[in-house]
Image (cartoon, rainbow over all chains, first blue to last red; front, side):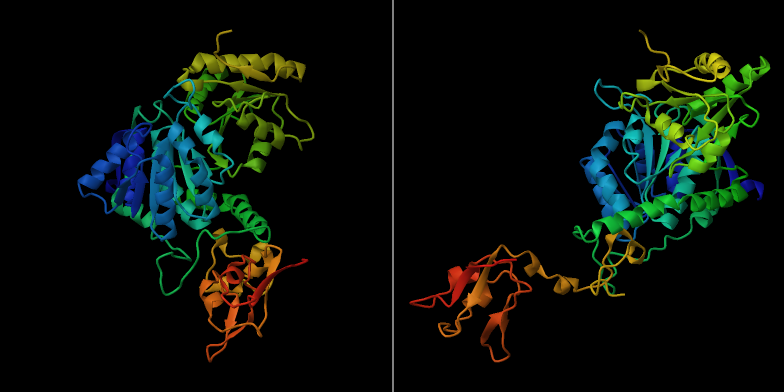
Length: 395
Length: 102
């Protein structure tokens, strides 16, 4: 790779996503232009206004309409993208299922923020976690670089798997924080994403098709089974795209990332920006001789069951960090899935859940170190009594 | 592949519930879910006005090539009863709605 194809830029997470979208140059972007929309779409709209992209930008009256317009555009064969956040994603909920059920390769940036009530605009995973059953592939980003990289890969993944992809990144912490991001030149991005190939196009009048037909007791279940298979078998494509991406970027992505996890006795599992905080905490704890490690989930849907199981096998104690309550009464959504995937291990490690960082509550290195210190007695005892815990809440 | 020849397994289906061909509504027998009342045609009372054919919201009345009303096509009759209501034949209507055991 020659040097001039890469450039270092100071970008917020939002700008990194918008820049990736500009370089992808999608045919259609439909988005709601007001709060809870973020600067991502403002930045992209500027590219449209400046004539730097060929995109048809459809400004609609709600997120429900935004996703509906994306569904129509994607069904017609257009390369389609959008972005939203918190209440906006909640309002899209109905149409999320239509996008995935129709197997439309829409890419959406989700700036993860809290859901009302109480009203809050800050970083929180409740929005995307609430949409985890919608059959959207979910990529999660730790920083602005990963946002840029994930958006580019998401387009490829969506169009090869025929499922929509959400690129998640933490509201404000990533979306509004400026970082150095290594970007490609436009031609490298264009070569990477290629042309969208679609087996069916709504607007191909020579080959008429029906999209969104009524599907009753005789076929609905077969179509859902087929859709589930797309999610079940998406991982090899996600990893293949990651490999091709590593060839042009030098940055390697997997379903999960392991940070000093190999020889770790105490592990935490997290996704999003807190993983960066956790890495610092782990480095400090290692100085003290505590064998701490991190399992970062990059791909949450499809859930990397086998990878997580083998990465966590043999750990003495595990803490799963949930930045969404889940309101199950017995822990957060990530916790339940991690705990479930360890069930088949001959020796199941003791595991606790921490609900943390809700509504943008700050989580710093000391907080994460406290979690690891809490794991020490659990590791010695080999069991855990109270697995459902809160981090940093006032009693 | 014809989607309408039999019930297919999930591996055989086009993705996303797409129907990749046109004109498939013809194969959808809407008469399968008739209301429980079924129209019966009495040709001896029929005055061949073709009102029933005009009013039928589906495709349930056969008309011959020379423009004569023929019997019902029950594959597409939902039992709405509009034909029986509109039939102008007197003193008795040429279409009668009868209970149907299904």
